[in-house]
Length: 225
Image (cartoon, rainbow, N blue to C red):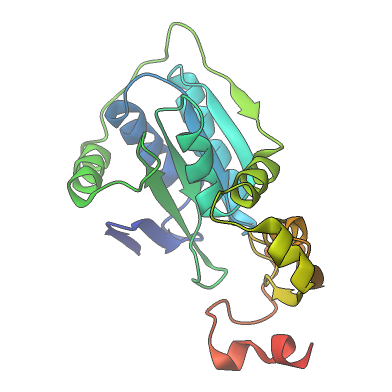
């Protein structure tokens, strides 16, 4: 089944949130957003690659330029929307749901998530499934390989961060990223603050070797590190 809410869309990838289904959301997003570039990213679930490329391919057919940030945390896509001239974005992610799920989150031009009424308008467009003709000039997919680095630098440079004070504390921190979207970003952020980082499950390959909800029963490796 598909679950649609203010959080976006989530569904089982074998039966409901397929690349074919996702194309309908691409058309709706194109219709809803003003002209301009659209930012995109995904979490590490293997199903996310085909879903993202289905959406991006449809947007390209309709004349959009899509900036593809790769596997990144959701806030990194929001950061990139905020710091570029893109008119919005989407993230293929199911957050803490099990591996058989995936989802879509939609980002406004001001880098916040769609409001409730905007989600409802988008879902209405999906349900109507309007026929959209090929653009006179196709768009392109532009890879952005430094989104995480840009986000880390911006966070470490915030005025509220006393970098010298943090570095002097010489923190030693264990990260268990469950091979998710934060597998590169979290260690990079902490290392930029001068922390010694011990990495557990920090390969963003989507192989969740424990439950993804941060519950006590799922944190045994972290407790033993």
